[in-house]
Length: 397
Ligand code: GLC
Image 1 (spheres, helix red, strand yellow):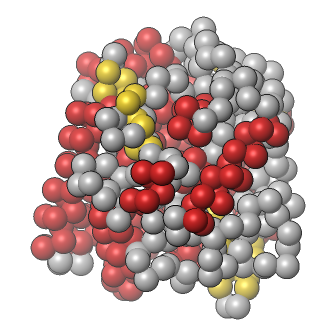
Image 2 (image 1 turned 30 degrees about the vertical axis):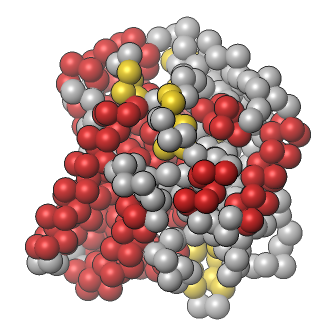
């Protein structure tokens, strides 16, 4: 398979322009809008061969930024298209998603050396990360909260079963009903973190905060590049404060766990979030070695013939073949990409190459599907789904 050719074709097919804003939909029929972290992935990929489209992807995301600083997780550019995910105000979901924006912006800059692009979006980036550090941390714990599982990027992950009030054996129908109910509650509390957390869903997620740490560091790098020293030092400090709080509240038994409520109760469901902190270097070298040997390469938990399971096979919630219950086991190329980057950061080159090869095999066998049965390699969920394109970034030396 000529991956570059296939990626270019797919991203072109999924490209849309509305009111002068250019963006890419994750899947034409299944996900017909613009999603936040998807667009960051698109920008990272496009930066390799089409810088202007990469920049457009980020600019269109920021065009719907709220005055609070929030960047919405979905922008309903074509409201005529009906879809399950319709909530929020101002043509958006009013929720957010893992904050990969600074990282994506730097990837564009790395290849274009275009300081004017960085300078043009810098104020918006500051506003967004400030929002996460303040509005999403109303009690000053140095951890950003999510007010809905969708904000984690993993809407039906069993990490959130307890705070959502469902059991591991929940049916897809009941799970959706609970999420829809939560969206109604989010509207009731006006998407305000303090109220929404206290009354409905109070979670500090490992993935979200790991992404935040790395992006704050990148933001500090952007500030340094733009000679804004005051921001450089404050974002560096913020990054380390979040990393420190994650260590204090989330780390136990050699891995990080998401937490719930004011007392930081650990949500002890084994998911691939164990590997996420590798991406931001939050494990010591020794800890990382153990995480890789004890968990990542463990065939009885995460390591499957066709990829890394998003939920451990030992969990009661594990469902490798579930079409629309996709974070309860199936492998995703997006999660592979984060793991790949994390492994490379620590010098686990062999393991990283294995993840890259597994991802390529998935594309070759099943095409650009949303996710895959990790036991058989069968494609699941949406078709013509863009995340497979991240393989291109894993192939870059
Ligand atoms: C699914 C995924 C989410 C993604 C969205 C659009 O809801 O869980 O992470 O952003 O699809 O691709």
